[in-house]
Image (cartoon, rainbow, N blue to C red; front, side, top):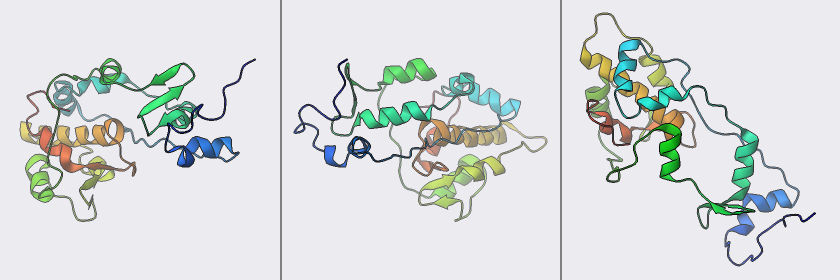
Length: 207
């Protein structure tokens, strides 16, 4: 039986091989890997859920429970090449495309690239779009704690109007972005640059 060699055929092409995780594995080392994800535990109340379902991100809520296969992800990490931004597999190179995202999550991928501010008066923006101002402990740098979003917007107050419902919808969408779509290395915070994109929930969210 022919076995796959433990390394690139031409070592001069992948310039980062010396520091690549696969080198440590092939030399007998161990790699401990844990996927960073932070899914929401509960869905929001029905009025908030209705607003979210009417946005372009509503399809994510229909995906159901997602099982994370750490063994598969670890194998893919071993085959990921930062030099070429592709997975190097026995059958050739492969990468994830926007078309894959569209098929898997039902998200729109057509149109202009999405850009947003990466710094600003976050307290003022949060007050305008979320109806409340987090403390300095909740905002770390330019990222907000998702646990704060969970606790602050856990339930709708009685006799709410459409403005409050949309504030709760924005908070939950931020939770979806930070815990599922665009998680960062913290696994517990989400960048506030996405919040201004959620100002008008009656139009397609450009994410």
